[in-house]
Length: 433
Image (tube, rainbow, N blue to C red; front, side, top):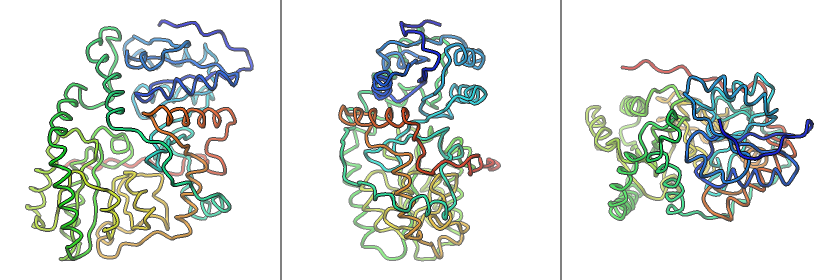
C-alpha cells in the first residue's frame, strides 16, 4: 500500500473514504468541498484509472491480490477511523467486501449513481440501490412523506455531450489496459475488456447516421399503425441492476420470457417494440436473436427491433412498458403510462407500477395512481436526488456542492425516505433452460 500526504484526522473529525467512482472529476470535487467543511477525505485506488481521477492528497493504492482485499480494507477502515464510505456501484466485487466491513464497523455508506430523474440529476442513497435501497415501497408512506414537498424542477440545467463522456471513459480505461502492470492483480467488474468494448462502439458509430434515420422511420410507421403498442427496453449486459437485482442470469433469458408471454397472452393486434440500450456496445447481435425468436414463436410480424430513436416520443405511443428494472420505467411513469417490472426496482410500488402477472398485463395494463405518482416523484427528488451530472464542468460543480452539503448535514434519504431494514428482497435466479 502507498499513500499521499493527508494529515491524521482529529479524534472527533469525520473521515470520508472514497472507493471506485465514475470516470469523472466528481469525487475529487466532492472531497474538496468536504475538506473545506472541516472533514478528512481519503481514497483507495484500485487501478491507474482511479489514480488519474484522484489527483489530490489522501490517495492510497491497493495493489494486492483480490483474495487479500477483504482483510486489507477492513484493517484500513479501522486504522484510519473512517466514519463514512462513498462509492459508485455497491455490487461491484471490491465494494461488496468494503460495504460488509463498513457495516460491521458501523460506518455510514453512501452510493452515488446516475440520476433516477435523468438527464441532469444524480442519485445519492444510503447503503445502495434496488434490493439495497431503503427508499419506502409502501404507497401510503410515500403519500404521507411526499405531502407538501415541492414539484421537482424539470427544467434541464446542465448539459453533457457524448464526446465528453467518451473522452473521460477513454482516460480511465486505456491506462488500465496498457499500464495494467502498475496494479497487476486488479480484477475488472465489467464483462468485456475495454478494448473489445471500444471496437464494438467504433462499429456502431460508423453506422450512427444510418441507424438514426432508420429508427426515426420505424417510429413514424409505428405511429401510423393500429393496435396497442408495448415497449420492452433492453439494458446493458454489464448493468448490476440486471446482474444482481433481477431473477435473470442474463438479458437473453428475460427476452425469451417476454416474447413467450407476448405470443401466448397478448391480443392478436398488439405490437411489441424491443429497444436496444443507447449505450449498448453492439457486441451481442440483439436484432438477429430477437427476430429469430419472434419468428419461432409465430409473432415475427408483430415484434419490432429498434436501435436508436427518440425514447420519449416512443413512450407517448405506448399502451404499456415492460422492463427488467430500467429507469425507462420512470420516464414512462412521468407520462402516466402503465409499467410492468420483472426484476427489483425502487419504483416498483403498489398503485404506481402494475403488479399483475405479465400475461394479464398485455390484456389490461393499469396506469399509475396519479396521487401516488406525484408524491413518489416529489419524494425521490427531495430525498435521494441532486442536480448535476458526471461529465461537464457546470454539472460536476453543482453535483459536488449538493452532495457534499447533504453528506455534511446527514440529510441523505431525508425527509422520511429511509426504511430499515430495506423493504425489497433480492430475487432468486430463474433456472437456466
